Length: 338
Image (tube, rainbow, N blue to C red; front, top):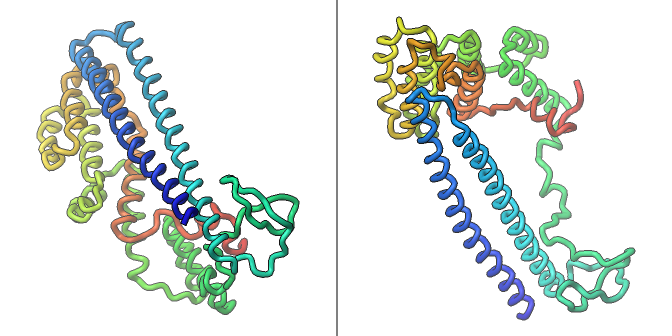
């Protein structure tokens, strides 16, 4: 019972630390957001007045960056301390398991007694020093921890490998190579399997060419399911189209204002971003590239929209963003080298 009480005490400590950390984290982030919000309002006010960035605001921005860094480091340090507390709970449970279930040590030669971290004597097996009790989660039955696919025939394993290669080729847009491999390996790939990859590759290629129309049509047709995923894909596509109109100069101002109606369904979630885009219209005649809104013209937005579309579309269609072959390259050694 004493050992169980020890576990309970360690658990209470962890729960108390979780509670304290959560409250401290929430308070720190709220203060930081309030501070950043005030600074952002000052910067926006200075930008609307057309005044250059003052030395005072520059100093305040530097202090803000330092405060963000210090806050993140403090929260990370506190979080690491919680991990240590959780580890102590696990060790306390292991000590109870070793005392209440001696069968865990059956067949292990003993070297004598050893004092654990609690100051109590426990038996340890022969070794060069004290060792921890064995983990109760260990499963000595290999069939219980190994996938059934390991025992498949060589032909079956080869087919799985070929299918992984074909899926990788489809995801990379190498459709001709994938078809050739299917023919040479007599692999029968269903059209329903190909279709999502064909459609996604067509849209991604259009995005690489800065053509938003296919992606917008796809996002509008899947709007409800994207909303269920909390995806901002459709808004980002409309935003990028609006920015293209702004980049065309003052002659596109009326068209840009007319297109802004597409932002109405997203006003609640993206109010701040919409305000920024509307504010950029003030500088349209002077040229956005020389205004505080020049970041809107950054080409990185196109790379971002390709990544966002790929991630959200794969999630919606139940596909993996990374192909099985790419994952194999990351973990190294899951399947033989080709």
